[in-house]
Every structure is written in structure tokens, then in C-alpha cells.
Image 1: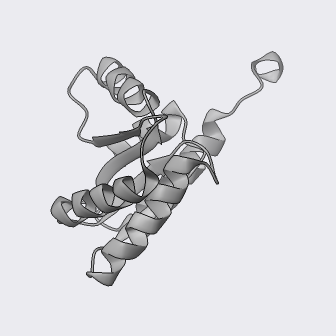
Image 2: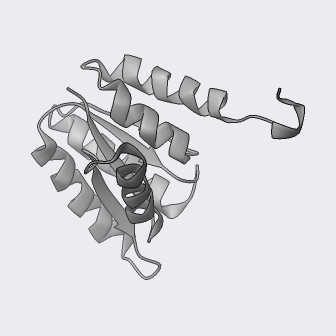
Length: 132
């Protein structure tokens, strides 16, 4: 089963994990890697790459903002982990719908899980003024 890892600006990943636990009524099966404002990006890349290597299974990494420091750390760590044969996929623009979809979809194939999470995010964006 693909593992879920949140890589975000602190404290957003922990907040998403807490909220997912509240909504699901159970401890969410995910890991959190919150990046502090004063974090050393080089050290964080190494630390995250090690974390990915210890995950074992394929990992879906969810980041908050494309191009921001957590995204850049995740992208570089995934490249390092891939050189060691670790399978990880990266999606950005994460919202709570995406986190919940990732936790409830639970697919073995990280490519299919990535697409299901992306589609779940799009379905979760609704103009409530125009809905019935």
C-alpha cells in the first residue's frame, strides 16, 4: 500500500494530520514533515531522503505550494531516494480534500493514487453560491 507523507510549511502538515484524524475519527495513517521557517534546506533534503528510504513502500508526497521551499526540498529528496530505488510521487497544492482522499483511497499503485487524489481535489472545489 502506498504511504502518505505531508511535506509542508510548519505547522500546516501537522494541522492537516490533526484535522484528518478529527474527520475520520481515527489516527490518520500518514507521516508529517513540516519545514520550519529557519530550516536549512540542504539538511532537510538529506533528512527527508532518509525518511523516504525508511518508508519502505511507494510513497505519495503531498506539498502545499509549488515552487516553495518544502516543494523544492521534497523534489530533491525524491530524486535522491529514487537513486536508491525508492518509488515516490509528488503532488502540490494540497488541500484537506486531497489528504482525506489519499487516506481513504489506499491504493497499491502510487500512479493511480496520485491521479485519484488530484481528481478528488478538483471535485472538492465547488462554488457554493452556484450549487443546489
